[in-house]
Image (cartoon, rainbow, N blue to C red):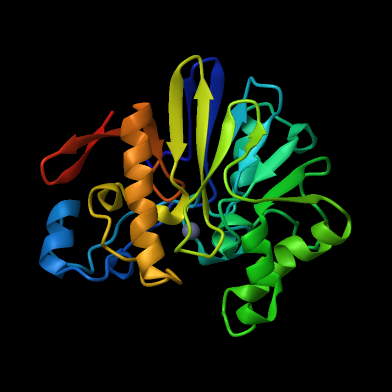
Amino acid sequence: MVKLSDTFHIGNLEVAALSDGAPERALGGFFHGVDAAEWTRALGITDPETPVPFNFGSFLIRGGTRTVLIDTGYGTPAREMGMEGGGGLLDRIRELGVGLDEIDMIVHTHLHGDHVGWNLDADGAPTFPKAVFFVSRVEMDYWLGSEADANPMAAAARRAVSSLQASGRVATFDGEIAVTTGLTTVPTPGHTPGHTSLLLASQGEHLLIAGDAAHHPAHLEHHDWIPGVDLDPAESHRSRQKLAELAVEKDAIVTGGHFPILTLGKLERVESGYRWKTL
Ligand SMILES: [Zn+2]
């Protein structure tokens, strides 16, 4: 059985990894700039077309001054695609005994459709009635500006944030800020212009949520494997280096929304670069 929800602790904060769909997918599109033989070996497969476990995930953080949700899943498309747990994020939240009106803040890593899916329900009404949505200003400007007109992902991004912005519920930020006690934004551009990872700290423990700077733990070892969807490959490469350095500096547990639940690891510096160790 695929796990669609699991909970762990960082200091005195409770973090729930929640799935909005957990398909098996061939991941070749995420590993450009490398021979297929090399990345398949890292994933423990031989054929690049072999589907491996994937996830459309969010993280719910409780126990601090605010109840925070990182990203809002894929939404109705995940349900229509027919994957395991597809479109079930809201049910996963309710199963924890948390009402949608109890979520104070949503922080978006970026505005791709598989990260903003439940900002609105199928009728276009806000799903989280009290939440303020934190989005990088660069990210908002890109998707709402004319530069993104030709981007096939623009429609989903614009639908997800335009009405919320018009009603004053989007808060933009620049660079590295504490969005609430213990939760700091880490700019990691490349996948999208304002892509943001998150560093959670409590009682000396740290969690680094990579976002789509890493679609698979292998990305944290191989920074130059470039997802085909990344808008700026050079920035994407630099952002993975930055994440790896930060993970080692903070001795942080590392995870990502596209990692199967529950995938937690740490990075260590080795002669050739960085090594991922699953916890
Ligand atoms: Zn994604």
